Image 1 (spheres, rainbow, N blue to C red):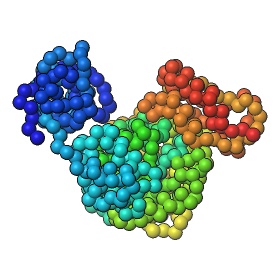
Image 2 (cartoon, one colour):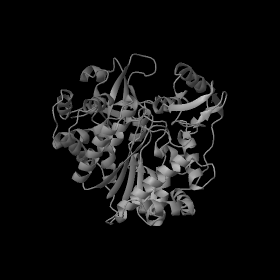
Image 3 (spheres, rainbow, N blue to C red):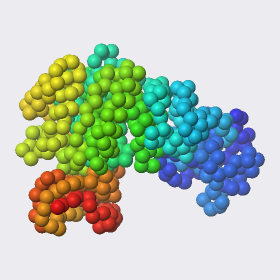
Image 4 (cartoon, rainbow, N blue to C red):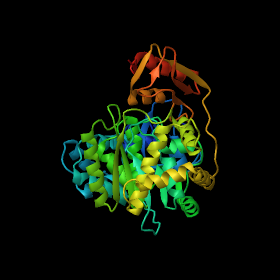
Length: 500
């Protein structure tokens, strides 16, 4: 589409819309009137021969003068503009793939070509956040069949780039989530890399949890590495811990995750496609998937876990991945920390073989690391765990972990937040349940994961005996106001920890 002949001049307003490209124009602007632009229209914006697609917001008066327009912070940054630059506009061509999204809303099956078109348009930023949310919602729940999950996975792979390590064996692991504090990845990667295997671990940030692996690792070492830097770290140390979103190996998935985070959803089919597409993009050939099962975990029943296991193996086979699935106990949080820095402290305690290290986190990490090694050497079950335990308890895993951190840019010791509030038992008894979802929400209300040092530090676990006034957990945050907000939730939710 041809751009408008008369440009406007850019004025800086400094409006932060996170990752949403927004353009601001006056209601009676001659371009709005002549082109028929209305609020929330998607328009093509061009400055200095560079173009982006942005959502139009109309301003009545005040902060813009006649002949001026502005851009949101991310649009300003991505176009690399300066105040006074000339900005041109044109109508956005029709986005035909939205027809497929609307079909999915009515529960019609989509083809691989449909998914390919949708994801390409999402990556090309032709979809607004509302339109991406429509796609996410249409595919949520149990709305994708086996064929569609395979097609979605392949489409996610095709619209991104892929790493190639020129090796027949490249290992990986992933947990489907829903279990607070289950930060096994840094320990597993350190063990497997120390064993001499290649494990290029790209991880996501939190979607609906108080911490993602990338958030936790970022409290100790840089995770925003380029592809070239990842290759250097792998060449030197066999393993890495990096944020996958920075290298855009599966760029459509990164956009979808951002919308899922806002909606607080993580649907089954999209989760499978997300996980496996990123494994292929990272160049992995063999992957272990951990599915924790529990009453308040993401996966509630053994039946649901077996269904997920089936899909992971079938879809993995369809895209050329060898997948091993572990169904594990998800009845309570793992470790003590819930939140990036607090989980990092647990990881370091296990790697350092400290006497008071959380044993549940240690044993879970050894189980998974052992399964990864078993998958690599095709050994009998249990041999890999013996190898993993020797590497961890000898200190080799800690040495490898620190070496990887140094290769990624250095190591920083995680710290506690400024404010804390201790929650104590009001009666004598036995802890019969810790609600995973409620304890995770409390950690998020305290500021995690955005505030890396915020979260919950557990001091008890299921089946523990407690006395009146015994410490159950501590809430950490950097902001007193946020702490008060979290305490309001704590007051309303009385069954976060059940004592009988």
